[in-house]
Length: 180
Image (cartoon, rainbow, N blue to C red):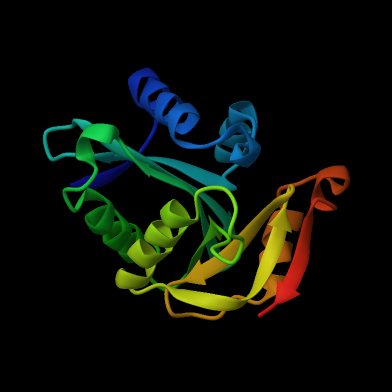
């Protein structure tokens, strides 16, 4: 498996299609915004590909100082359950070695809305060496937990990353929900 920047029309199309399929509307940023951030160098749109170039998934990161937010990560349906996600996550952490790599997951502390799926997703990340940070956020109305690759990311760090990419009217929708 390899990670490549989504540059070609086909790669961008594959990323957008999986992005729209894999993430609920409440969790998606406008795809045009993601492309704009990518063009400005504030994010990376990445394809996960087999060695022969077959599309296996996507990773969209946001970059700020030494922080890397794995904003979106999805494996194509045909690649799920085969270790593709674990391998891709390992490659992503290697790509960003020396950076504070983190991600958001829907809260497992909220018993509504597919708690089994949320717990399964969290366990995947924990098995992959990620650690839970001691705070939870409200991200545009969605309660999220923050996981890191064994580094520390404070709420202030987290918020500063969003401050670097969001206009003030949107930034007010990123807030600390509670310390754990």
